[in-house]
Length: 149
Image 1 (cartoon, rainbow, N blue to C red):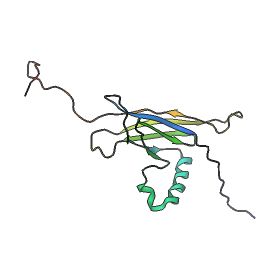
Image 2 (image 1 turned 90 degrees about the horizontal axis):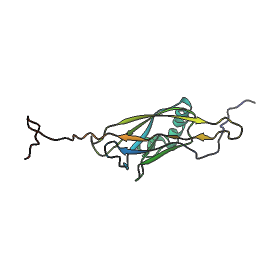
Image 3 (image 1 turned 30 degrees about the vertical axis):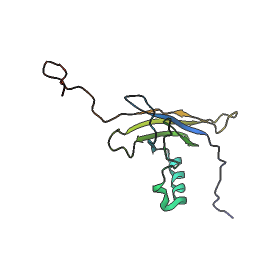
Image 4 (image 1 turned 135 degrees about the vertical axis):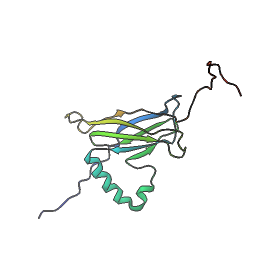
């Protein structure tokens, strides 16, 4: 009798992609930045689709999910147990209006096939610097002297 079986894999909780989000101008860490996996291998997308069905209507409202997270106070973020492949991350700062731009970053996850370490993920560092969208400069007269008000 043939049947379809669901194969469960143990949770390894291995960091696959990790990084830090900072202000591109000051280098200071940014807390609360949303980092989203915008593009991923088919294996991840299939798994994510099944995971979304588990949460049904709550899925879209979730802040923390397998494909998106927020940075901690020190600007750090991470994604766990990702299958091998190329990923595109998008960092944006919701709740601060247009103060910061949005940045995409690429990361390639590699999973070991060696007998000594089968399935071990080699984590990838993906640091992101968000550019502020504020103008900064000095008002000068035609002879390049600063103008004071």
